[in-house]
Length: 294
Image 1 (tube, one colour):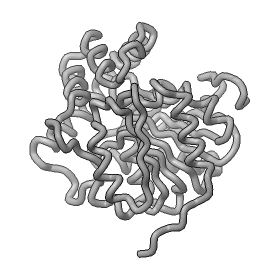
Image 2: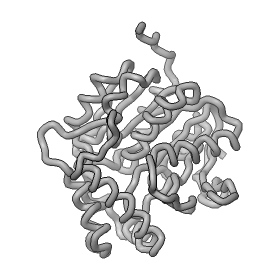
Image 3: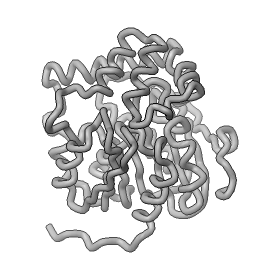
């Protein structure tokens, strides 16, 4: 299976019940959990489908649709979304018989990867985080960043044109915003259920940003609790979490390093899948570093 292209239906599994969670399983080797980001039309397949064959050659990939995305259940947003996501992730890992896993997350998925490592360190081996949300803030540019502004504009007025504008802010090379990708995202993002969840999710986030109603201890202030070796991967031209925002987590994480990819934006794994897969597999496959004392 690892030598073939990944197939959506063949890799799909669903945990049934009152809160169904859909996910993909592909490949062989040490377990690797893939956590996607947020935004219109997002799912595990949309973000990571191209990565399954190259990374699945060395790892058993488990890639869930987080609650509210893909075909997983839509949660009530009356609490900490990270804890909602972590509960779903733990159900998936238990169903797959996995008690320890490498974790790779982009944007929202990067934030959840760090929270998982803080709340359940026994589950998490190494972490790869691409432009992680909540763990960074731009040093030189305004908040919210261009990518977040485009996202909020789409949720306020969900037109196809605004979807395209948001997608263009995700990449360094506009040629990756193809008609096929646009149409796939539009079909998923424009359903009433998807629009309702996206509006609720980002309205809550923007209210928190405007009022300061964020957690008493923000994620970046807890990064020192992460004991996992961590690889930060950034696209040089990221307009959601700009490159300069990487230096805060790089400084605060106990065991971290930074890899920057040129000709790529926030969707570095989509724009540079072969190079990205190589960097990830090299990091996850090398001997472990000694953990710092203290």
